[in-house]
Length: 109
Image (cartoon, rainbow, N blue to C red; front, side, top):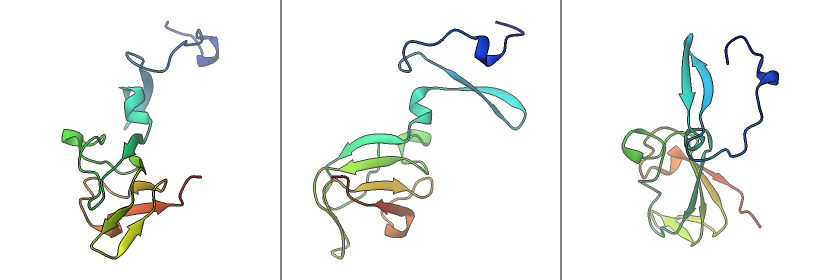
């Protein structure tokens, strides 16, 4: 649809599956899938380690901004305790098991 304003485009029905969103990075037009835009990765039931898979970064590892909701108590290093319902967010790409590389967001009630 050349030469149309965004406001003139038809409304999409479903923001899933094969949908694409156009963007610009460094002056180059690119496309994003809904999975790339949505940072919520789902529920996480690990009890002794942060997520290592299911992320948006290369190879599926966590990317900065990826978020999970805990479904079980998570204890890291025997001292850092995260309650079920807490949202954890990767602060950097490939955060690993370093507590400082994760953001703890208050438990969702």
